[in-house]
Length: 129
Image (cartoon, rainbow, N blue to C red; front, side, top):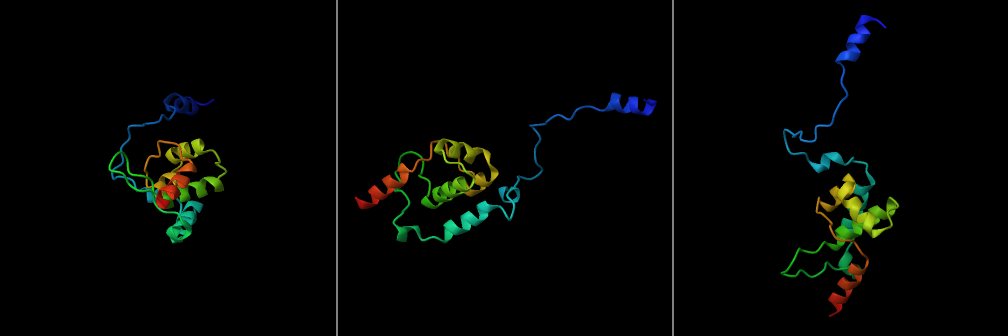
């Protein structure tokens, strides 16, 4: 080893993560999802659907608690999860907090509770009453 190599080893340090690093400007989630990502196609397809004509309406809003998720958003999340082989509703709820395409699809709304197909059945029952 030469003297120059010894000095390089002595001065180099391992890179560490700086988790408190701030951005100069707030980042846009739009920039973090590629233009050719399948989630954009799924969002376009779901937005073009006329869900009320298919019998799927948004759930009624109560004055109490959080507002419900829209039917289009949940359908998009289920379709994206199905395309990525995420079949479990629990894993899908976790993926909504961890995967950037799902964060983009949901508009960064946290889905804290489990996403369950029974919600769609309840929405249909509420519309029949």
